[in-house]
Image (cartoon, rainbow, N blue to C red; front, side):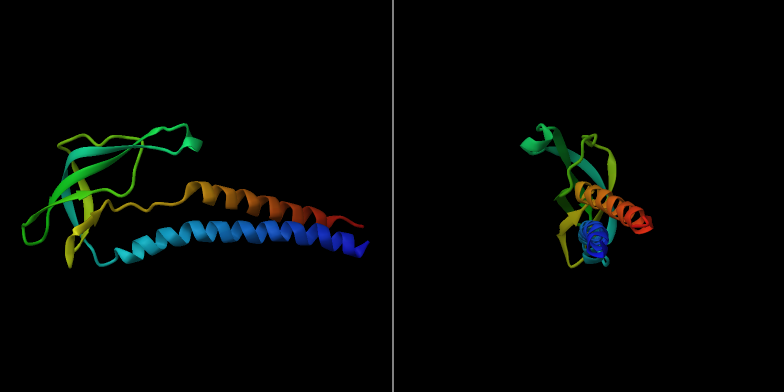
Length: 143
């Protein structure tokens, strides 16, 4: 009977560990992006247009938009940029948005957002909750 109890604790433990790994992978990419842009300068940009795209077939092909913009670097030189993060909303042309750019190469610019892989994070969270609940439940049983 002890091996059965061990099985009912180890399997949920694997779910817990896999969930923590998924959550870590989701957040690691976001922190890596933030760290890569740590020395970048902030600027105010004017929206000049919106790049239109759609989600993949698993998401029913919803519309997504990424603003294109114009900004000036610290020396006053004007640059064009394109956001690499798509959102559901179109940016209004002519409005000002914050951007960050690489001072060594101002052609590299993007929106200063903290992007997280929400699907992976949510799946990991569900697995962690399931694993922790099952471990607690099975460990408290008196076999």
